[in-house]
Length: 223
Ligand SMILES: C[S@@+](CC[C@H](N)C(=O)[O-])C[C@H]1O[C@@H](n2cnc3c(N)ncnc32)[C@H](O)[C@@H]1O
Image (tube, rainbow, N blue to C red; front, side):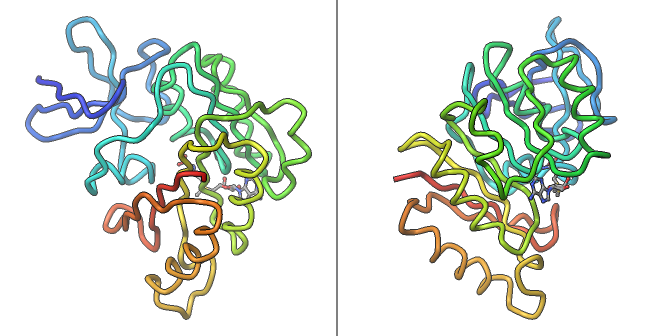
């Protein structure tokens, strides 16, 4: 098995095929059924593109983004913590990921995960109301959002205004069908980026097909 570095703690692992992996920051357990590899005594976790939009962006050509050791991350739409667990690997034990999830049944797994991975801080709340968690979420180095809501762009802008440091990156999974099922997905993304341009530079837009249907990932930099 051979490893090729993509960015800090993210690698392509070449075996019979190419697999995206993160270097585990917390032991050798599989979190959501992903494969775990031991290479020269270090543990790497498969990052599955069909399970994580962030992972699928790497399969679609993303070759790095500004997220690394010790970063503070605000993650909106954490669900049970699939992608959050890989973010937790990337930022390492000295980083902090504040993971907001509105659905209590999803948050149960997220809370259990945070007991093993101490750099995850679960917040069971509505990302539409960032004032609810502004007392304990600090200024962050990265904002990641995957909430699949009609008002997802407004939610992103509101949270970025409060928590994202200027010059830092926001990663926004735009679910085109959440906004308007009848509209051409490219038109939906164009409309949403128009709303974002005042406050963000658009670094990249990646269509996640065929790994994720009806989704684009926007990489933005806060002005
Ligand atoms: C597509 S799933 C996220 C998957 C997750 N990002 C991953 O890759 O592992 C969207 C999640 O956003 C949550 N969500 C939707 N609206 C929300 C809101 N207003 N505030 C917080 N979470 C929300 C949903 O409950 C759901 O768990």
